[in-house]
Image 1 (tube, rainbow, N blue to C red):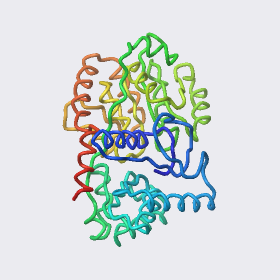
Image 2: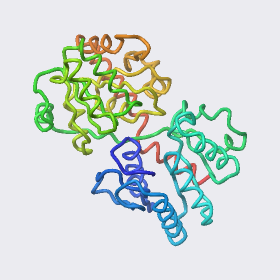
Image 3: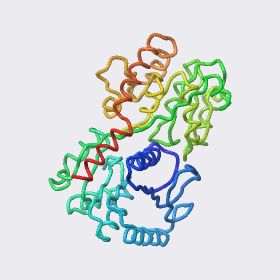
Length: 354
C-alpha cells in the first residue's frame, strides 16, 4: 500500500495477510511510507520512513522494493490503491515476478488523469497480470477500458473481520468519555470532503442526539468551527483516530451509524457497523445499495445528498422508532456475513492459482 494510516483499506490488508498466514502462506505487508504511527503490533515494512517522501526518497523506496522482490523469493504481489498499483506492479514486472495483482479501490474519475492513463496502459499491456475490482460498482467503472484491460479484471468483494467489543455499552461509553444516556450516532472516516461529515453536523441541528466522529484529516479544524457556528458543538464529539479495540468499543457504545460519504467504492465502515447490529443512515450511493443489499427490507435508510434536510429526517426516524432499529439490526448482521475476510481470501487464492 501507499501510506500507513488508520483506514478501512489498511485494516483489510492486515486482516488479509493474517488470514493468509493462518492458511499456511507467508505474507508480508509493505507500505511506501508511514503517515501516522498506527498498527504498531502488526508486522510490516515501511520503505521510506515516517513522512511523505521527497521525489528522491520515492526513488530510494522503489529501489529498496526492487531489491526485496529480487531477493525475497516471492510468488505473488498484491497491490492496493492507484499509486501502489503502478509502483508495485512495475517493480515486480521488472524483477520477473509473474503473479501480479492490482486491486482497484478507486474509480478512474477519482484519481489524477496521469495516474488513470498509466493505470489503463499497465492493465492493457500486461504490467498488471490480474486486476481486482472490490465491488460491482467499481467493476463497471472500467467498462470503457480496453478489451485487454477488462480481460484481466475480476470482481472480488472486500472482506473484513468486524472489530467488535465484548464489553458492555456502559463501559464502552465510559472508556471513550461519551455521554452515558444520550442516543448516540457514530461516524467513522477521514475528516475530508469525500466523507462529508459536514452533512451530519448540519443534520444535528434538528436531531436531539449526540454524534461521535472517529477519524482525523485535513478538515478537522473547519468541522470543529462549523459545529460551533451551528450551535451543536456540545453534542458533537471529535474522537480523533482510534485503535482497532477502540473502534470496537465505539460500535458497541453506539445506537446508530451515520454515513454521509459523497462517493465510495465499497465502504468498509458500513460493513463493520452492519456487523455490529447498528441501524444505518447512509448516503444513497449505488455501491452502498449493492453492499448493504438494498433489496432486503430495512437494510438501511438511503438518503439523497441532493435533498435538504433528508439526513436529519432519516436520523430522526431511527431515533424515534425502536422497532425500526431492531429490524435494521437483524438485516445488517445478516448482510455482513456475506463479506467475511475468509470469503475474500478464498477468492484471492483462486485468482492467484488460476
